[in-house]
Image (cartoon, rainbow, N blue to C red; front, side):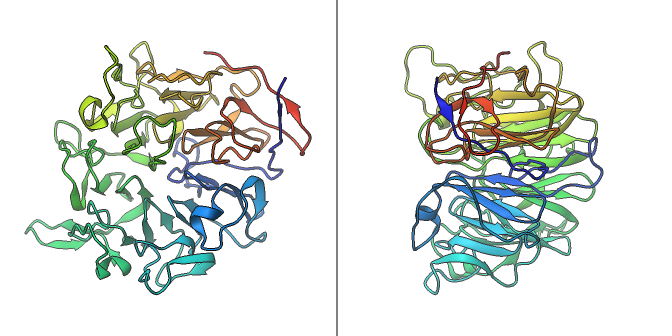
Length: 441
């Protein structure tokens, strides 16, 4: 039998993805993310107000480098942190930035300072800032401000700059089109969510606005054209997507075992009625609408040819065709989706090449195209919160125990040296424990 190192955060945690917050069916007031995971870094926010790290992040984030944190390590002191956000090569704890600034995502010219090795306030950033795919965002007075890479219009300022334009290094408000065609500030924003070259604003009126990269339809405007300003997400009929309480979009991790590493870009939106809408990339069945790409004759996979882009919202469904219902939280990983039901059941869909669906296997398959529950006895019906990362999945049980499974190459599971771990696993103290029984559908 193999052994595992432990992970149990003693504090009672509520786990979410970098872009997730609780649905209003479970919690009227949104909660801040308490686990945020990127390719190299996993940030954990404990209820004592301290942030912890794990993963092989220091050599990619910091100019000084450093040894990996294979197990959770303290990063900030208790009582000092209330929000966390891990991006591709940089991160925020509250309004403090650390990591690479190669595209000016700190709002500072990288020729002045290329990297921040300690959390540093970078004015005018305030509040719970978000680190994306080499772009940063923060919310102030109902407006979104952005800085950093702008190859696909992800700054939302009406321009696309494939280089290192000086304007990218200054935080500026995201824009929308006014009726007269002019660009005006996007206002009335409740939450900003990052994706892979795409960003989303959850509005106070329950609509969702999007801008940036759109090769796989992640802007949900019926096209695959990039757009450098915000516009609302619409159904295929042209109706606005309404009554949304949570949005989640995975950030591309571009690494092994994630299929073609060009991009991974799908979006999940939890509606007030407990149903889940999804759009964007669907090559692995992560939108759970019955569509999935499968090789028929050993052909080479090309995401721009063989993927099934979904350019308008569809409902995530079970294998009997019925929509998922009574959902209270969603989490979008790179190529997989998680949804938590009121009864504590986790539903998963999408790619399972690193065991991230939690079925006890890690076959290089592209899913069934439908959502299926994890019926693993030790935590079935006992989960109260979920999260997703780079081929990884997370859950917090009723007792506050943190479980993780999936891709462990970069230490994102916080369970020790790299390996693929398809079994949900929780461990206490730091004493080795045996592999747990694999969950089955």
